Length: 213
Image 1 (cartoon, rainbow, N blue to C red):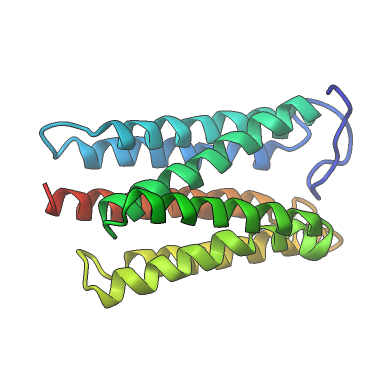
Image 2 (image 1 turned 45 degrees about the vertical axis):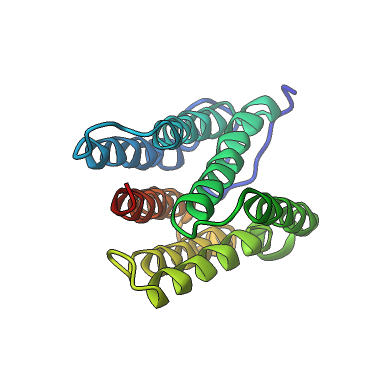
């Protein structure tokens, strides 16, 4: 669990501060958590599900910072677990509270997403690991199309989130390839884009959830 991990262009030697941009850029997740909280303050009561998303967004920022400083297997788990949980909680809340799926259908959607994600994790060496995020992108795009077609509040917000995520995946993909020309790499831009993604996703849920209550 303490084995050293070197996955990114910016890291050239072991050490806590060998990925300064990758580490500092995780502030985007903390800003996203704060922005989600500010948005929910407009409601009389913050729902439990939204509190969970805020907590997970904060955990993503902390976990990713630990991973990009300590660069060990245990830190990698702290980086990965909150990301997976955020996706699952968001998908459950959106399918139940916006799409109004029954429990069985929403649960089936989560199981299918987990299966697809587990399958895609076999291809961690393809496109610098970006292919493993294909199920997440496709689900987000599908929700974005639904959000627009149903003319929800801010109907383009999830499509915008999909575009931001696609850009984030590009930055993740080219990180090592661009290393000879840009020594810091582009992984920090993956973090910045994903902070925006978390906020936009939560915004779509919060604004449309409030319409129904």
